[in-house]
Length: 92
Image (cartoon, rainbow, N blue to C red; front, side, top):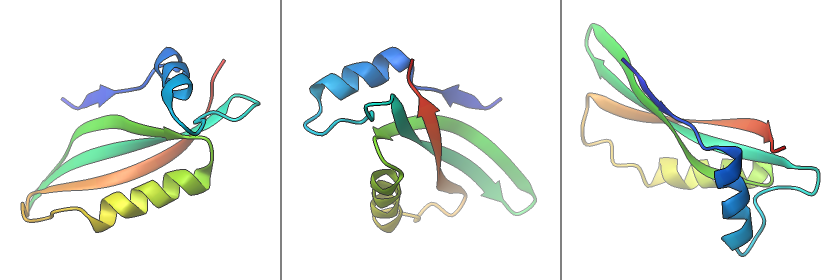
């Protein structure tokens, strides 16, 4: 069973209040970065979990953060890999 942990609108609004730079545009749009943990071992492939890990006001900021995380990743464990997705979200 895959664990999915999503960030709520309330959590996004709270982050927007405490960050130095806003993570929501004036129109209420934001970009949520999710980390996908994948288990792969020869014939077995399984998505272990999906976690929302960060929120940004622009797609560019989100992509830059993903690039930073990808470059600093430690892939020493051959069977477990990480991937990131970015989705646009409207906070109401």
